[in-house]
Every structure is written in C-alpha cells, then in structure tokens.
Image 1 (spheres, rainbow, N blue to C red):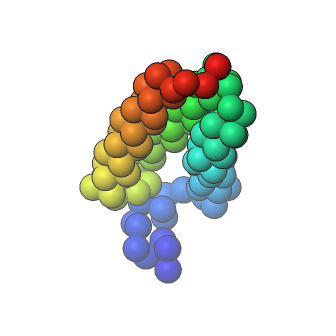
Image 2: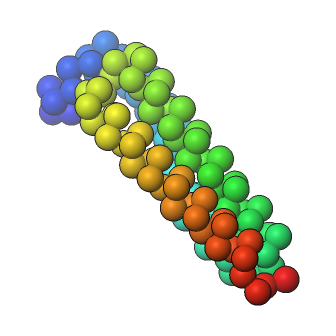
Length: 106
C-alpha cells in the first residue's frame, strides 16, 4: 500500500528505502534529546554545545530529505514542506541558543 501511494517507491528495493528511513530516524530522534541534555547540564557552555549538536542533526535530516528529492522517492511537495519545517526548527533552535547565551547560568 505504501508503494501504491508513493509511486517512486517502486523503483527502489526495500533495503535502500530502509537505509534512508533508518538514517533519517537516527538524525531526528537525538535532536530533542540533545537539547534537553544540554539544558539539563545547567552549564551554559555545555547547553550551547549540545544545542549545536542538535542543529547538526537537523542539517543531516535536511540533507537526507534532499537526497530523497533527488532520487524522486517521495512526492516533491511533501518533501519541500518537511524541509521548510526543518528550517523553522533551526530558527527556533538558534533563538534558543541566543537565549541560552544570555542566561545567567555559568
């Protein structure tokens, strides 16, 4: 049923698709965990460092989505919406980093 919805999936074997999905999960899942871990440390320097690591994961996810666009696995409109959402996440994360830099924590 997934292949029927996204016609581009028919051109790829499940191992290739699984690899992209797996890499995407490995990029997306640690993002909020890194933010929480950094904030929970109560040290400004570590909080900023972990927030930047979360940003790196967002950029990795964006790169994976661009690969999905290049190989036409997923509908272009949906992938572009996801990329736009990632850019919003990056803006929010950069705002958080700025807030964190100005916080009274050491």
